[in-house]
Length: 448
Picture (cartoon, one colour):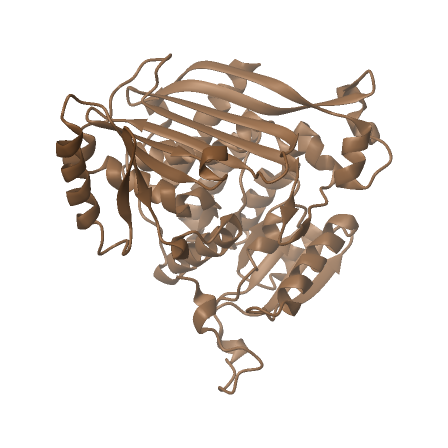
């Protein structure tokens, strides 16, 4: 539940919160990605509304401030953030020197993110970082150092895994733990993995109701990261989170079997549409062939995790066809049924969880088992149900659970705040973050 529901707003008739007493103060560093603003889409009960922003200046900062202002001025649940900015080439050094807050939010150009993380935790600051926290094997080493410092300095470091809060993914995980229905997760093979996850994204899209303007560096994989180290962080995280819930994993648990990368081709006209720039910057010239920009935003790999075969794929197209959005596909294969999340035209581009029988049991017998399982989850997820769809069933979910990708950033932030309040995270989170990034870097190496 979002803390914004109970926050004292400036226009309420209640006594205002004593800002000086609020324990958490945000510091936003070089906010070049729109995810930085989505962390502030809502207010939080114990977070100071004054946010200190340190940036080199320029369009990235201007776009970020516009997004925050739109949140502040909207008619429905307006926020009341107060942005206090510092700009200059020494912005990061100034942030470390001033320590105007205690939670650093990182979501922007990824080229220096691992170093920013390391220097921030060395300074005794907590860090909430957008994915990916590292985009090369060398940066993984910095990330390892950062987590070692975290343990010494008693601060927390966490990456923003929004997909754990998507309701169909949550229910896929829940149902996979119900042995009467799902059985056991099969081992699978490289050609028929036990778990398959595919994510399709678009460079041109609408965010918070307006067309998204992307920075030019987003198209440079040396600054943003290749697809195989970027969006795959979500997919590998979900494989770990669903297949081995709340279990400590180690990098040696994962073995990469296959990996490949390929580019999305962007024309000058398309580039201008999303960046407002008339030409490709000089730092992209090596990626331009015959006037077209090749962005290695696509990647996939097959691997085993404790013997379970999994395949993850990320695809970036320039623009979605009218009426469509970014989509997610996921399948978990059990000995008794398959759990499939689809988000295509048949689902009106909204994620739907299907249950497919995988045994010789009659449809009637299987349906009874499914209904018993759904009934057992009613306390945790009131209102969910199961409905027959020819030879399979789909899980019906009340609209209140479909709060959208943008709201998930506030949910992750609220979860991180709960860790800060407790002074610790679950013991499996840190080793599993390191396992996730180690797995991805192995795939990165193999793909090249």
